[in-house]
Amino acid sequence: MAQKRYPLGVLIATAIGAFVLAALIFRGPIDAPVMANISSPGELRPASFSAIAKKTMPVVVNVSTTTQRASRTGGGALGGLDPFEDFFNRFFGEAQPRETPQRSLGSGIVISKDGEILTNYHVVRNADVIRVKLADQTEHDAKLVGKDERTDLALIKITKGANNLPVAKWGDSTNIEVGDWVVAIGNPFGLELTVTAGIVSAKGRVIGAGPYDRFIQTDASINPGNSGGPLIDMQGEVVGVNTAIFSQSGGNVGIGFAIPVDLARKVVEQLRKNGRVVRGWLGIRAQEPTPQQASSLGLSRRVGVAALVTEVAENSPAAEAGIKPGDVIWEFNGKPLPKSQDFPSLVADTSPGQKVTLKILRDKSERAVTVRISELPEEREVVTQADGRDAELGLRVQKVTPELSRRHGLSTTKGVIVVEVQPGGPADQAGMEVGDVIREVNQRPVNTTKDFEQSVRQGKRGERIVLLVQRGENTVSLALKRKS
Image (cartoon, rainbow, N blue to C red; front, side, top):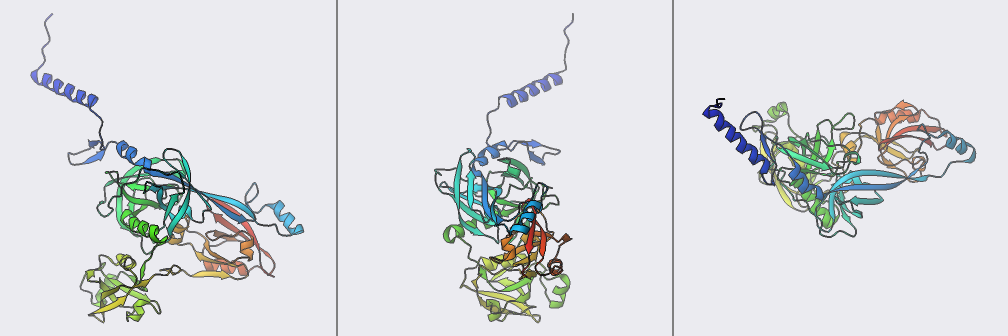
């Protein structure tokens, strides 16, 4: 039988294919993610994130907290006010508040070998007990070292038993670009050390969470329980702290937000030193001029690099320096404003007592103003919200805004949130707490402070008022008795 002959080109192609296959089978371990070609030679994507995950998972911890809350009602089997408890209260008097433990779960980042951990403040807010589970599954008690509500960051530390822990490596959030691959690690819904990947969707995102929000937006899956965990770049370095999601349902929809690590590092240093963050204060509100405002004010520079003053607080450094509403600030201490949204951060990063020079535009003429920066008081809010108060119930409420929703870890912006409870008042005796969201008053929906006040006024003195309250993931009914 004649021997079959193959063309030379086929033999060469076969040999090359065998060589490539052998190289793939016998290749050694790699330290960096494998890159696979997609549709064109210049378009690449990671084929595996395993090397990054193995390198960074040991620095991610599970943070769980327990808070003892006084509560009259936990609800019966069907939820709401327990009818048997109500029956006994009517005939034998009011029951004493009982302690009901409330638990929360989040993530954290190990930043020192002796057990310092960076996390979100809303993860450990009001916690009586903080427990940390390391990647090796050992559990430790931790204490709160410092907190900063305005950036939603907190520093906690393992009290004992932490020795030579693996430490996260800081990255540089200013160098990441939109479209870069990032990895999120955390404990979504209590599922420990979950790794998800995505890209940077946007930088400097402002979501109304406060004057210092310049978030990294990502489509890497972030869910409840991821809060406080790291956002990691392809070098295995932390570039952000996962903190918030945009969602109608409470689950991931591909829009997550992380605090840039450059801001987080500044906060950490102050929390270590002072237990809080000391910020500069000027005492103004400002906004970006619209094109129409820019034209009427005679602005020759492009909109977005100037701050239009809309309000000046009384007895503030700005007022003492003669700054007025309508002034346009376009230079801060010799440097042009990058964007109007950056102005609050520039002021906050300035040491109290320092004098700065502002270049402003007033009546279409430029002038320089010298201002001595003061310290931002702890109790002063940069943005105040209209609130509602009921002295007879002993509480004060505000409309739920995106900022308050993020600060208190809420999954909704409906209802009014309790921001003050008078000690010993009816609300306090019923177990109402700051952070509770009132959804209904006597079965009437409440969406504004005006709704709340009108619904409360319809009740007579001495009558009970039933509030439908959202507390964390639970909804309960609380019965309050107005002062007669």
